[in-house]
Length: 142
Image 1 (cartoon, rainbow, N blue to C red):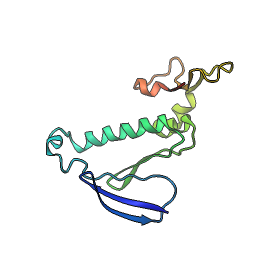
Image 2: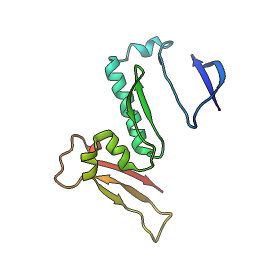
Image 3: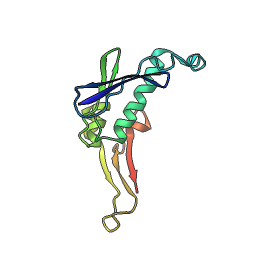
Image 4: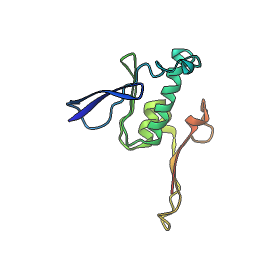
């Protein structure tokens, strides 16, 4: 069982129980409808959606255990599996052929498990990447 909340202008407009699968779904429509000053700084719909898409993709890479779905005009644009494996999210974003070439990194010190840990993937030497973000995906934790 879940709950559907409708919020407008920062106020809860409606709260209803709903049958739902586990997890959280967030739908955002007309985000700046009541902030005309902010609306004037918005770029084209395409540019704004590109920025939103980038944020969702970065969160998917940062939290591979979470399943992310992104829709635009009710059409699926991106979906991560939530498998917990960074390489799976990378493959969903950049394709399996490039993902297969990536090299794993594990900078965990087995003698100091509470120390800084660096894990992730990097492109092999000589592999051309369009952006640095495609070449390096790291997770650093203490």
